[in-house]
Image 1 (cartoon, rainbow, N blue to C red):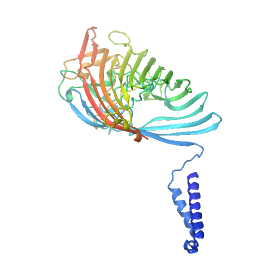
Image 2 (image 1 turned 135 degrees about the horizontal axis):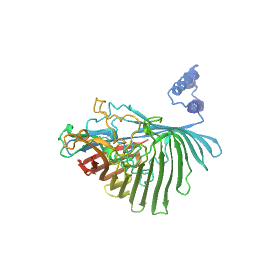
Image 3 (image 1 turned 90 degrees about the vertical axis):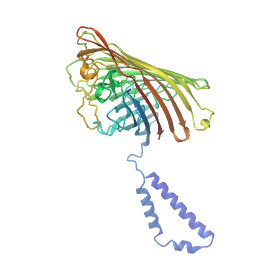
Image 4 (image 1 turned 180 degrees about the vertical axis):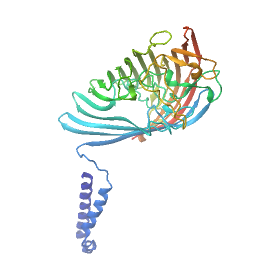
Length: 492
């Protein structure tokens, strides 16, 4: 073992230097005091130290341990009830992972990546009844990445296993400010909170059975901007060329997609990032399982992209993200109007400043970022089916409460969905809109790899458009939502 042999060598050198020093000063008694079993004693000590070191099974593969911890205090207000939770910030969750790499020959190398995230108190899974995910059926840990790869410096990398789809994070990772770890375009702090209709009872009985994510999402996931995610498949990622990189992949059962990204400094004054991706999904069960016949034909398309630019001398920046999701599912037809649901579309614009500020000694800590933005999500009610039963949102220790998005027929029971609001009977959902504005600050602690952050978000009263069997329109007035969170994340 390399470390153990190095230690043994240093200890033997130290012993040799001691003996030489004794001889040079004519003190032979010191060598005699070591006794006849000095070497065996030394070996025992070296063996004990070796037993406490971390060992690698394959000495040819270099291993890197990495990760982050991201915790925050969240205050929320659904305009009837307010509370404060301690959460794991799902804008960039706490996680840890291992990366391994080994050289094959010339420009060729191989390796792996294994990454795990904690799910306790995950901010994207909390609601008015559940503050820590203690009864989350998903368990305390979630595997994010698990793949092997082969890489050539000139030709790129091929991955096999649980890995990112090309479109994954394309609305985040082209941001030249790298502030998406504090806040990006999605709503990760109130996704699972329940909606509340205006004029409903001012208590828990007045909460809807629909979540915020049920009216602000794309078809493949519970997010509006990060639609596709990490899946089992085969993917290719090109090397970087003049700031450009491309990716393509196929994933079970079935999804394929491609993306193009760009990120580069333009001279000394500008840094620019951009990306655009596409995904084609025919997997009936989406994230829930390994496909299989679900009694209908799955077919939908998703596009997403982003652009960002930063003036380096001033620190001023602008970021924009776009997302689209469209269904051609054979069963996604409105029961009352006989039409397919409209195209889900979303946009987000953020602008601010990021630089070292010479006030109050902040420049010695690292970069200070102050920014704000607005976003809108249109028709994000994701009419469709995953081919399995609706997901379970656990209310404290009651796992029987079933919630889900709008079904393929578009029909909801308004009496149940909006209790006590005076909206009764069966309706078809035909439209929705969610508007948000936010302000934020992030302080880098450069020497420690830590960031401190503060974020306030306001959601206007969302709009939900319905029609009855006579095709008469009705709008459901819903309460808005406010939240503030502050916390810290540290990388290792």
